[in-house]
Length: 305
Image (cartoon, rainbow, N blue to C red):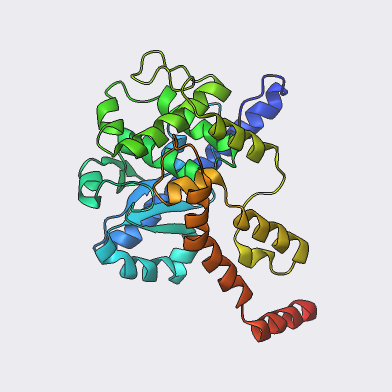
């Protein structure tokens, strides 16, 4: 939710009060989640969601629906058991196997640089400001730049970064292509939301954006169709067809990141083809092989309700 200056003051206050209550409730859930994992000797790392909201201004709420936790690969199976337990399901945990999809630095490095804080009496680890910004940028790009409002996450992580923020640590410890992804994501926040980058080493980020990238995000923002899991579209043939079409012409941003491509390459098609063969076909096959008898049983059960 972004602050709208023309809103009625009472309405703004009500939203702020509700967001404050929600944020405190979310903090308690996060503490409860860490207690569950700590009891089993697992030390997770919190990112996205509430961790991002700490950078938002007090009068601007940032609501998260789940708790994003990353755990080391050696503990992932046990962590998944905890997540799916009766206590874990109540907390709505989105579990990640390290940060392999979001970052190229190893788990040990990211873990060692984590910030430690306390919520509801429980110690909690979150990514360092530098690593978190990089991870959040890549996460936004993995979604293909579909969600314009989530670009505010990047805006506030940069605008309200700690005074000790180390740009070299954020940008220069990853490979050049990934560095370029991060700079472009920040550049988009500067171009479209006016993020001030004058006191950063990437002050010209908005001016160096590839034309295909800005065209892609503007097209995505203008579209009513967003990429969703195919499974949830199975009951709606029209919606299913739209989702399959989005996968057969994969988002250029998501495809480039998916296969580790360059934002400055002259063409996207080879990245899109590789990404489609890697993920798109598998996704479509999974949905087409959905258990039909089970679906019919589900349908009858739904009718009887």
